Length: 116
Length: 501
Image (tube, one colour):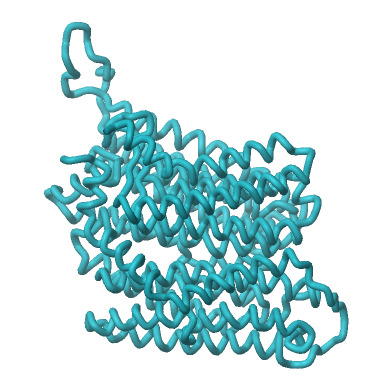
């Protein structure tokens, strides 16, 4: 299972970086979203995958028996997803406004602030 | 005992709570701009006061730590303040006061009615939170808080240049956040904890330190993007000159410095196992950052873009202190940090007044300001010469200590680079002086004569602080040396957070 997830994470990173290198700002935002998902899955996988062992102390027992699923990475991911959601919402509004103001969705045409 | 601690440690929470309450108050007063302005000034002053009190408490009582919700470390959320954090919070407070005063006079009505003040204080909350967080994941969350606030401040107004600059700023900063998050995930996977003090303990016991070094590179890149180091700084000069000057000033003073702060924190507390590799890498990056930043600045003719490149160059000096990884060098870096935050923001504020007077930022079209506004010329010279390192201004002492430490440690190359960059810095400051202040104004075009008092007061305030630091460099150096001592010996920090263990 770890192997599959590792491949998925790699594909997500590769896809995200590929999309970020496109000239369209829409693809840029999609690329950023993919990078975020890859990071979230990475945290999930790094927290070790344990199936069918919820971290609940059975009645009578004093403490958890290893192995159990670590709830902390999932809490982290939940936080990161919420933050990512907010930021992507902002990014989408930003590219919409940029498209309306600049009149193009081509990153190569947005050089007004770059000249050295 | 527990009760006493809680009361004393309230000072750690205040720098986060005060901006939050100010922002909430300002949002509630959405339709009353006057109320928002008053609240904002009060909130900033309170933040400065709380920062000073925190610094005093940390100075007398040692490193403070607070477990939110009383969950014992390393399980709960930890806030911790050592001297370095406290100094940074004081700087944030000082900038909050001056930039708020400056905004009162310079911010247009539209930006004020669309939530400029609340967002400014959310930004301050994020910055202070990042300085005080004792938990690496919370550091990530505070980074996101300050990022989203900075996104809005950068784009508020929606001018074309702002939006174009914002796309670059947003893209690179989000990428840095994704890398940071991945680094946090990997760190949790190998160490099983997120509390920075506990991480330091766990990483020291690690069987395979190579993995830790690999993760440290993820953090170096993530924070490196945020701190705008070579070769990851290109978003900065593309975006920092686009928003109103008040926003540029607070960005230049605080945001990249949060990245530098995070680098200092993780590379003194967590990643100290393979110093020969990691810190040499930082030293090399520092050298290139100084050189490329100042060369970029020399080529500029736009006032604020020139200053933006200087931010990059100065980051190099700060990293040099970290890369040398010696108490004396880090003390110099902390001193340098105080000086550069103040000098840089002052210069940005001066550029705003120049724009107010002559209606442009283009150095070729500016001129004659020494004749028409001699006071402003003096206010420009103080931070400019300090940045270049002319005695008795604080920049001189900072560079002297930094280069001195470099020579002492036998790092001649980086010391020579630092000195050469200093000369180029002086050169580009003289260029601004010649173009904007000395030469006659090329076109007698727009020329407002009166300078609003509120624009000048914050600049005078900052310039006085810079002068004060220059003349009383001794006490601040003692403070910086103590801060560096705490940084280079993490045992105190670990004990303050984890307790007697």
